[in-house]
Image (cartoon, rainbow, N blue to C red; front, side):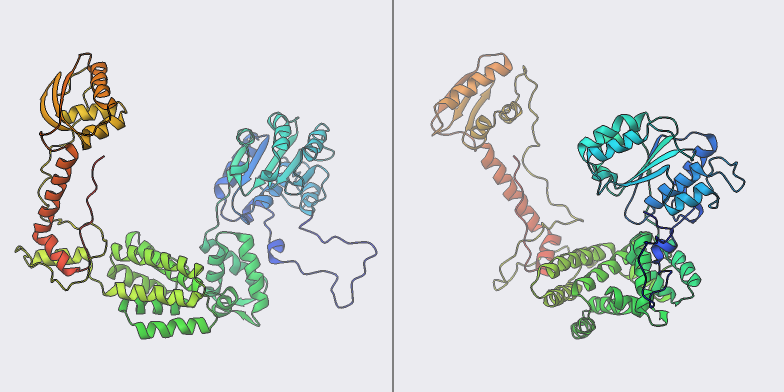
Length: 563
């Protein structure tokens, strides 16, 4: 259970080639022992410090966060802070434990009898929790507080959580619980409500890079700043992950940790090569682009990782355009390239690049030959770089005064492909000639028109009758409560149901005369005629006509019909 000392095994003799003091990985060697050495959790440290200073200590704390941000280390530091007696042996709880008194040393070594750690991943049952419940009945042997640390608490069974509830809410005096989890959503609400919760944040890449630099200086290892930046990015906010990668980088590098060695170790693409690749995509330089992709593949670069690097570059450019900032991890060359692209590329263009790269990444991951899928995705990007921007084209047409009707497309033009509906931002098409939507009258009131009467049927959830009235019934005369309607082929129950429903909703008896022919167009026919008129008016609009010529394979998408 100890992370601070080596355990001797009686009767075990080490070979002469193995030193008595075995090497400890960086993640254990540089594990934080005080709140001052805990990275990136200032808000939690301040809260705990104020609680200790004022004597307002909760009976239970829940520490949550992603892997490797210091949850278990924080639990041990809290245990030391509550039980520290100072160098003189008379101190009280403090936010800055001395680290030299007997409780601090014993807790750090994992051998203090009153600080009990339990791994809930391997002790999930109610019997394991019963041992804790039995143990809290006895006072601490030598410490000020008896502390139970439950790691990966979300792994406990439902019965185990239920057994812990009462003890967690009202533990005996001098007993504290500290729980840690990476999946707080799996912890029952009844447990969460009994704990003081702290969400440990991911550590920023800048903070990680500075921390790694201090460690390498202490280890007398030379390094490049760019190499540490790559390690910090790969850690994704986890200190332990970053230190594990750093350990691997030290072993991988013969003399100094270089950026090239870290890229080779992690399988990352050269950032300079990625920028050059992106520039070739924007320039539409297909021969150079294909040669660059082949070069990266020959160097062992995974095509999917190459697409991820391009996605990261587009994201960085977009952030730089919309929310400019100076990233201390980026070199001056990288920052200058991002600034230049952020000025040159519009947000719609960047959004299009992002969507196409994201689609390309999905294809690369699913393709039997990832390299071919990556090449096809990048070729699509090169082709898209040559396409005119619709917004810029509309602006150009307006500046050129494209006010005359455009000639019709030649008969030899290819058949149109489905595309987004085109409309003129400068000269909107005529309004729909149909009447505006009619609201149904409140129940008990007489509808003022045939359309309002049909809307009443829809509001009353009579979808079947509303369908017949819309598609099959023609109006001859509307004078409530008398109607003259025309229809043929209606089910026999429909006329009776319509009259009965109207009488029920309006409170008046309706007289409905049915004829076999004549009358106005049905509501559906009138709607379709209005939509056809609107589409014709849009096609006659000069700007829309010009756009259809500029994009010969485009067409006006079918207009949606109302329900």
